[in-house]
Length: 146
Image 1 (cartoon, rainbow, N blue to C red):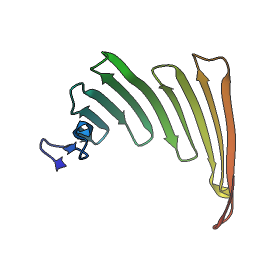
Image 2: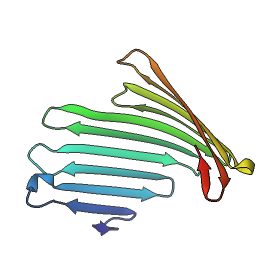
Image 3: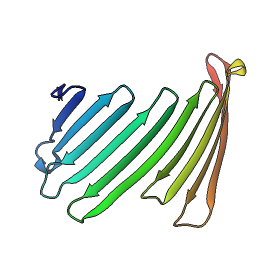
Image 4: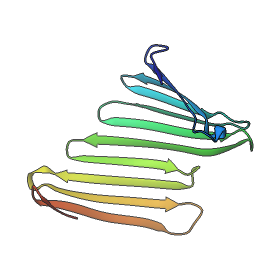
């Protein structure tokens, strides 16, 4: 691992012996409000992964993509956005090569140490949706009921 080859960057090379096909090279760039990461497998037909995030202390947008050079196909592409406030957080994610959309909402009730959660998921390649509802409540410092 080498840091700051270029300003705000880190590079990582790894390999697991004796299988030399497990080699990977990663390059990461960090900024106050953004980050970019990329990795390339070090073999005959490398897989290339790239991810990026940009945001502030309460709003974040992220994207991720993967490309397999042996098949010439994208192996993944995902995008998500999230908003975080002191009393709630919410996110929307389009994942699994645009086949799955998830939306979630978490409400924090600090005075009673309670959290409620709702998540909706829809997979476009299948019929039906999934709605998940949950919560937790801290009875005392050692006991949490979910």
